[in-house]
Image (cartoon, rainbow, N blue to C red; front, side):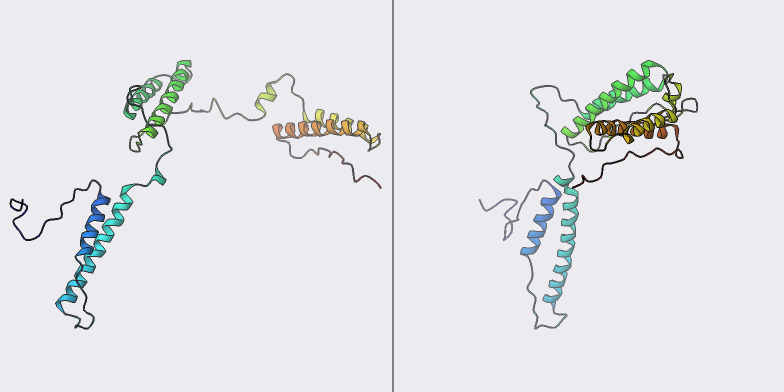
Length: 242
């Protein structure tokens, strides 16, 4: 069949259907490359064929720029989100990400209507956390990078509820012991060690107890913010004599 709307001219039109900008840019560059005019090095600079070659080179540079842009917009598997199993459409109903986002926003609105001291606020926050986790998982499965998943607010700390300090629990504790108690205990173990031979098993056992007592003293010094009181060191055995 050599007649009709596509055959009214000498040559055939190269018809190509491209699905992505990257494929389109590659096809444009390939078609442009095949129509390259020949450059005449011995002809003068303003020869019409050399002018055509320079025009072709400029157009080729534009096409290369378009190819670079298409490659950048095409996306890369390196920057894709974390892999997740795709949804099996015959197994369960795969809700879109927006479904979970709508549920999450409903939880957040109900949280905003309650005071933070209400225990129901905590229950709603737990449900919102679960819903946000499901939304992020579905976004990974669907490779969805555009839907915005809202954050969940934390309980605000006001002046009546300051940040906890290390001393808070200890000062309220009836069994709270001051730092001097721990240092006295450590010093008693060290005095007992001084009366023993270094190469006995009893000295080794006392040294383990002394190390534990010194750790407890250092912890209590940190808790009460004491940086000046000296905590005695635990002696070490030197090399065994020949």
